[in-house]
Image (cartoon, rainbow, N blue to C red; front, side, top):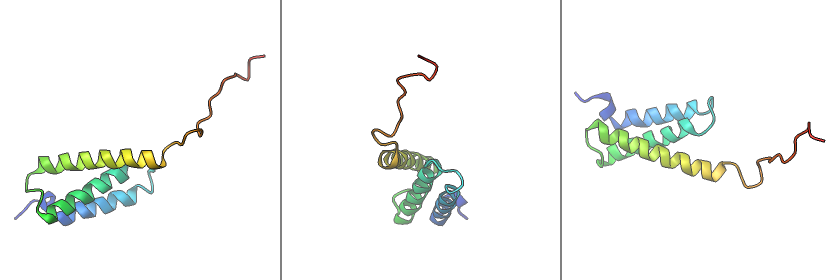
Length: 92
């Protein structure tokens, strides 16, 4: 009998659950982990990742970080969106 974390479908389901939870906590944090879990599930199905947990968690972390950085770059604060205050309302 294999452990649940060795099953590809468990990783894909975890990715779907994390993706759904992103709607309640926006900020691309959970969405990055959802993408990472989905990728780990696909890699397990493809036979790229073995049955060992540490490589799976490393893959999850790396893919989640890259996904988060890409999403922040694509939809983050654009040039000129941030208001820069050069005067104070209390100054005369």
